[in-house]
Amino acid sequence: MPRRLALIPILLALSLTSAQALEPNLSMSSGSAPGAPSRLVLAQRLFRQASQAGDPVLLLAAIRLARGVALRPAPGWKKQPPAETGPQDRQGPAEPHDPASPEALAVLQGLVADDPDLQDLVYDLDAQLPHGRLPVATVASSELDSEATETWRLPLSGSVTAEIGLLGDNGSLLGLMVSDDSGAVVCRRPASADPALCRFTPARNGFFTILISNAGPGWARYRLVGN
Image (cartoon, rainbow, N blue to C red; front, side):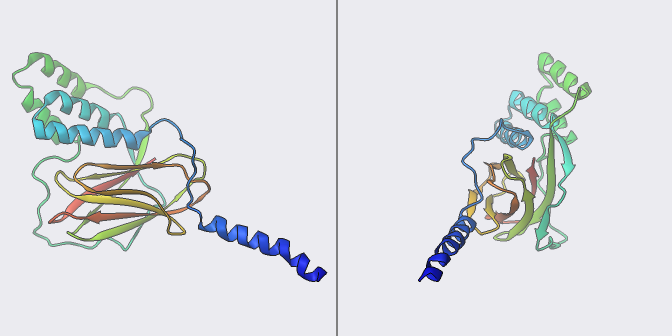
C-alpha cells in the first residue's frame, strides 16, 4: 500500500507534463507595439486600395511606409517541400505588387503628372535617403499553383511577440495558418486578396509551422515576412 501511495506524485507529474505538452504554445500576453511586418502589411493594404482607386495620396503613403523598412533574408526558415518549378510560360502580374519597388514609384509619378504640389512630394520621396536605423523585417519568397499548399517551419522565442505577414500578388487569393509543434493552431487567416498578418506571443521557445494556401485560379507569387 505505501508503494502505491508513493507512485501517486509521479503519476500526477506525468499527467501534468502531458497536459502542458498538449496546450497551444501561446501566451495571453498582449505583446509589444506593432513591428516592421505590421508596417509592411499596412503598406500593402494601402497599395491595393491606391491601385484600385488610382489615388496618388494613398500610393504615396504606401510607398513611404514600405521604404521605411529594411528587408533581410529569413535565417532558419525551411520550406517543406521545396518549391516546384511551374510552367515556363506562366506570366506574372502586369502591375507592380511591391510598393517599395521602382515600378510603383513610376506609377506614382504618372498619377501626379498634373499636380505640382504632389510632384514635389514625389521628388522628395525619390531623392530622400533613409536617416538612422530602419526597422528590419525578414523575408522569404515563393510561388504556388492554384489549389496548392506550401509549408514553412521556423523557430520562435518564448515571451517575444512574433509577427508573420503574407504579401501576395495583386488579385491572388492566399490563406495563412500558423500552428505550433503539437499541431495546435495559434492563428488562421482565410484566403483573401488582402495581405494577412498573424501576431501572437509564444509561451515558450519552439518550432512553428506556417501553411500557405492558394485558393485562386492560377499561379501566385508571395512574400512571407517576419520579425
